Length: 507
Image (tube, rainbow, N blue to C red; front, top):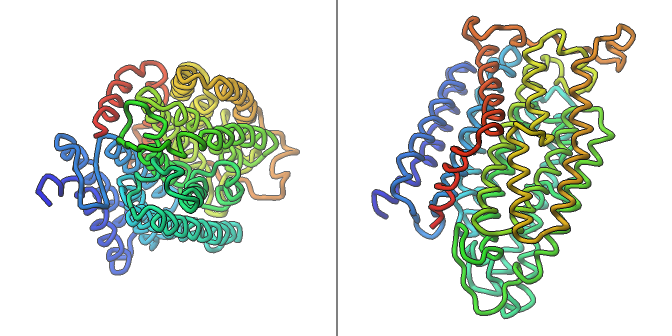
């Protein structure tokens, strides 16, 4: 292993080291601020080393991990999202538990697992990353131990994720028995020549991937877990957990749909089962995910559950580009991931800021008249929701346009039409939230649900020049995300050029 090869490992080493330091700080110093600062320093340092590793691509570390442009793109996305979640968590946790430093230890550990997952080239590293991510999420979801809904969500996720891991592990064993290979990229070239066992193993691994992506029919856990988990943790699950798996999917199975490009190259004499038979499976999953996510969201009055169903639909959109294949589709996936991360993190950051120590601001009635109480907060949330709906001049619109273009270029007309229809359906439930924010509070309805209305968000009325503190830091983070959503929608060309350089360096 050369010194340049080690450069790819430095972000992982930094994350591991920072997590240990945070754990020690939580045990001995017992100050949430210290854990928060160390977490931010570790994440920023890891991001810096991603930039240092860029000129040395491609890098392959033993047989377990490899680093190319798309992997480093995944690293940047994971680490940047974790920075925003850490900031949102700092404002959310402060005043609830000043000795919650181990929360940041779990956040760093799960980010380490997500990065390992994104860079995996073998079953061993894939499973290690998957379990690091999942086990950390068990504890993060159940962090609010005093809340029954949080404990229930953690138990549900634990049982379902544990069963899914068993599927993945058994699928790996079957593929190894059939092919004698532990190479993750071997999945894309499994053919009828590998016998009957290999396709069964491939299907079992896809069950695990489908669970992490929360696509139909593996989506049933999503609304309950999103609702029960603390708002910043929900943001993390919706973005980092799913984003890491999308990167794995694009690297491991994407080549089967790509004729002359992609992030990896796979050659096989016999027709690949993924390319020959699985496109119909993926197409069915994509279509059902779009319809199920959007239609189920229409009937919800819980904002976190609305965003849960929304995330199911958004992963369906991404699968359309995945099926299209080719460099254009890869660029569409990368751009849509960035847009989805920004608008989802922004929406949940607002929910976190509006939440009280007693409960999260998850009921639709909590947002009634928000535009009158706090115009700035309402404007930020409206920006995120309009982008999620895919309206023009937002990142969501450009992302959907790129996916539609990729689908049309691959002649996936049915999926393109389904995407357009579902994009229209989604507007209704996003605008439902917006309309509630801009309506006045009716005295008869205040507290009609029999639940305490959250206190006015601490940062909502704080000007950008206010005293430095957790609320202001959260406000700045939300403003940065909103600015990114608008900038990517108004003038996406420079960013598309940057994404092109990442995907072109795919090895």
